[in-house]
Image 1: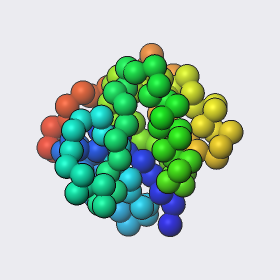
Image 2: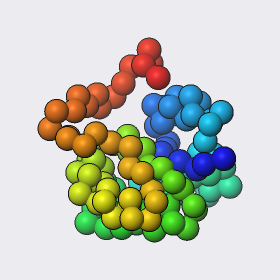
Image 3: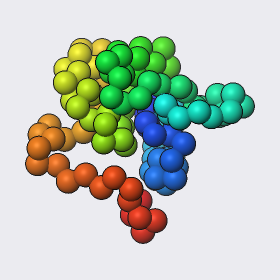
Image 4: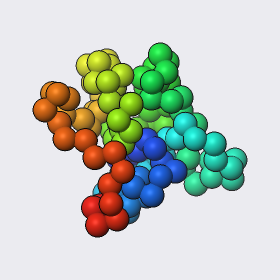
Length: 116
């Protein structure tokens, strides 16, 4: 089964999205927020904040270390860095699941419970 990295992994939205993906993917959660070490056993990994200059590099390294074939960024601040680096990710066989044109994308920062 393919593995997907979902960023903002400690948020309720990430948990709702992962429930939809569990039948198809093994889920790995990335988060820049503090979380208990106990969650590392449950598929959580520490990543830098989306605005960090090392964000895309660290996410790529994590994907390579954990054999993730897909990255689903859920944070608005993560989009620009991953958008610029998606060709590099592609060279390693990793798909960044974001629109090709961010200017035309509709972004909902805190989706309501009725959304996935």
